Length: 416
Ligand SMILES: [Zn+2]
Image (cartoon, rainbow, N blue to C red; front, side, top):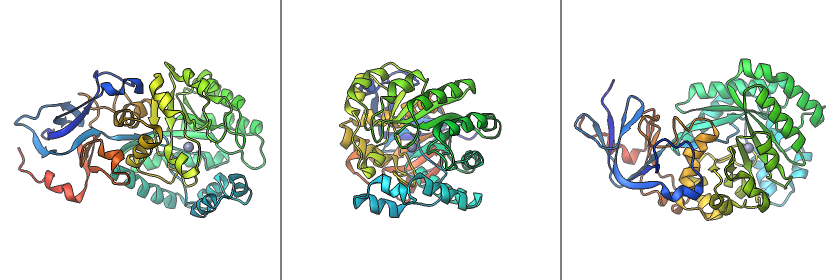
């Protein structure tokens, strides 16, 4: 085994209040520790917090050391973009009209179908590289633009291949109820979903099901059915809910056994309490809110209530073509009134919990996987220098996988 690597003399090292936590409500975020010090990585794991003579030393002076960001809600892989649609949206054209004229999810479905596997993977790999440079070391990808049994299975297989080909690791979610495919109503499509789950299990690495509950998509009854299907097949359940309008879907999702409820722009205040102490996280997507002109969810109240809150990019070609978790952090601090500790918790430990990976990553604890970021300044600069990429270097499983040019000197010191 090669020598331990030590990041030495950092201005800030982000630590949990207790080592073995797998999630932490934002109401306890101020207990996170942010102190000067070292971080030692060895054998792919975090090995300690004091460099000794056996370590290869990397000067971390002036830097913050934080866990790699976990982006637990993306729609990778997808084909093409929808920039024209964005231009129409900001000019005031309603989504229903864009969808009627062939835009929206169906437009991305046509693009996916028209491209070869190689073309789709090339686009997705380039996006994963951008995500890496912005500090994302773990991400989730979804299907949802297949809109047929064969198309969804293909998308899930491509999501798995993407994770095989990039430095990051992650999980795959089967978003099998995204839009209602042509020739189906919601009930007949849910029958198709039920029929494809054995193949999803056998042929893909999907470990969760997902559904879009909205007037233009699926209902709370479909959500309950998806929950039963997830339980029967040993899969987690995620749900896009309360995004464009309120359907009272959060209590239904918790009843259905959802691991997360995502979006929540229209979450009614009376449903916040349902998430306190629940085995279900609130995944907030401020990039989609901002670019879509959506309402702001009651995020301050969620964070103060004891709910487990999470941030993600929602990277997708329609509503959130955003790769940068630091940008998402900046939006969250401004829109939600969150502290930087609440925000970082939502991008690391709690995001890993949504993916079922928080025993292994999402925090700088001895024994966890050494997915670690070196930032070019204090964590307070992440939201403050809005639009700046603070990531100076990225370590995955203890190995430097990306170093920004102006910080390369830190890696050029004498070997121990
Ligand atoms: Zn989404």
